[in-house]
Length: 223
Ligand code: DX5
Ligand code: ZN
Image 1 (tube, rainbow, N blue to C red):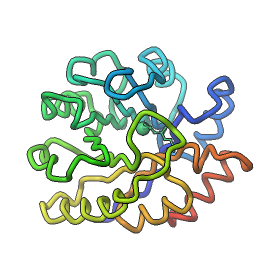
Image 2 (cartoon, rainbow, N blue to C red; image 1 turned 180 degrees about the vertical axis):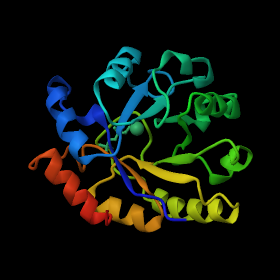
Image 3 (tube, rainbow, N blue to C red; image 1 turned 45 degrees about the vertical axis):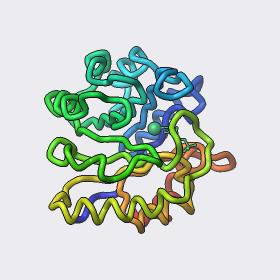
């Protein structure tokens, strides 16, 4: 099955006080907006919040790709504004009732994504294959932008694609998040990823405009 390749710029990496300008540019070149939500407990950082998501949803025409780095997400999904066409990722490591959380996301019309940290094995997905639409492979330990890719995650992407195809889950997408640089993105794409969270090392890297950086990223992954 061929999955369309999609670019999801990580809005926490953008100059937040010029967000209007950046949103206009992103709407011309990106496929969705990656929104990192952190609770200071599951990860040692805070970023964007529920009001930000609500206002972003009212402002942009792009789908949201909400990445919930929060504990017990199944208790908090109602705090967030999302619906048809959006993607919502919850962490395997953060949920005591993962299949319930995934079902709640699907009930609201969004794609249910399971996020797994670099050290979490692929077999963690064994019992939720039917409940998920995609896997968010963390290629860094979540919490901060600007980190370096954990090298072992490249092979993990390749193994995950094979694991999903062998389980007759060709429809399940693979998203990658963390140091998706121009060079890393090419290798991640070759390994089987089809959704690319682009942050400080690609779309928002200094020296070129967001449009120019996104065009370069698309060339690297052959969009
Ligand atoms: C990290 C976040 C990522 C981050 C990506 O925990 O989930 O989305 O913003 O930033 P870069 O691309 O700089 O690694
Ligand atoms: Zn993220």
